[in-house]
Image: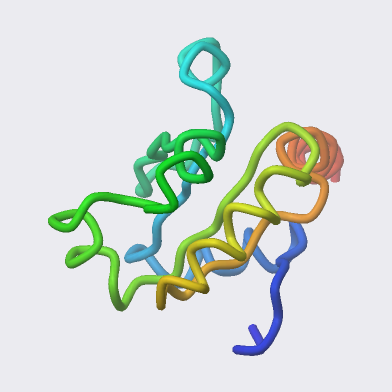
Length: 118
């Protein structure tokens, strides 16, 4: 994955999940949508931090969280990729290594169903 890249596609994310257990999946949708269903990965816990809260506070995460996330790649996602892109930009402005998932959960679900059929 190129360091200056702002997005990641489904194939790249699948490869990262297979190679690297130390990354952060960040669902930036509101908590209600997160609790209704989110990204499932065997060894990576998906966290929730709504983009609207990030935007309002101008703080992507609190200080203790920031310290533990500092050197980890962060993959942001939402339903379609729009809020995730804005969230990733805000995280990068605060010094994090963040990219957004192109097409969001919608693209991932389509990708996963395509992979399972092969």
